[in-house]
Length: 88
Image (tube, rainbow, N blue to C red; front, side, top):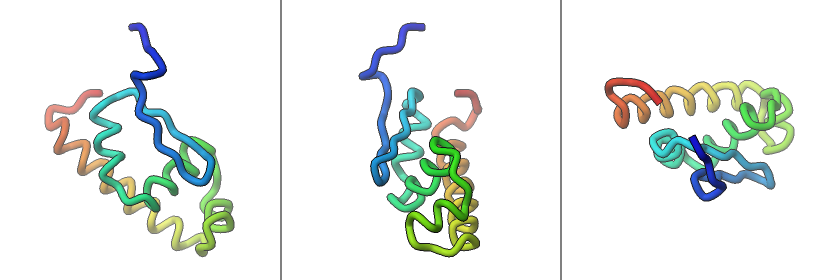
């Protein structure tokens, strides 16, 4: 499959970015709050720990952990609505 730079959706947070090639995943991700997107970008695209994320955005580690878990649950719920049969 050929991929072109314009095929990706790009999400940015504080100078960091996440490129998502799948339209359904990008749509689900776009429905998250800016903070939730940012936490997930820092965790999964930049491989930061909850403590590092907290230090960067000014939140305690446990708050980042709770918000990350909540964001993942919301993302999964959005994906289930967009892709009820599963598959990406």
